[in-house]
Length: 103
Image 1 (cartoon, rainbow, N blue to C red):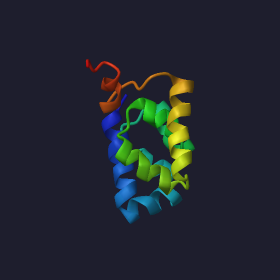
Image 2: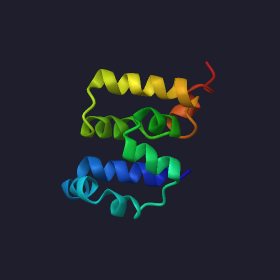
Image 3: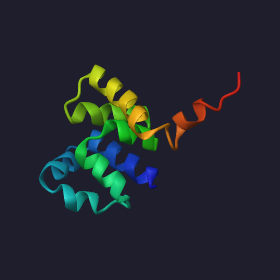
């Protein structure tokens, strides 16, 4: 998994209008510039916020991507919950450590 490249792409989509335009008009060419797995590619193309969350995408980055694809706040939260139900626990990144934290 190339979590770094997924997050880099989503960050750039969130911040750069030219990258957003390319995403809308030449998505395949844009995505080919990032070292993505097939699963990552498909999750981005499909707007699968739940799967992206389970992959470990940072919530701040994912929140803006969710808004970019037209999801309301409650849909974003539900997508993350549904992602865990469908795909299992978060695989990588910050959120994967929360379950292991000792009190």
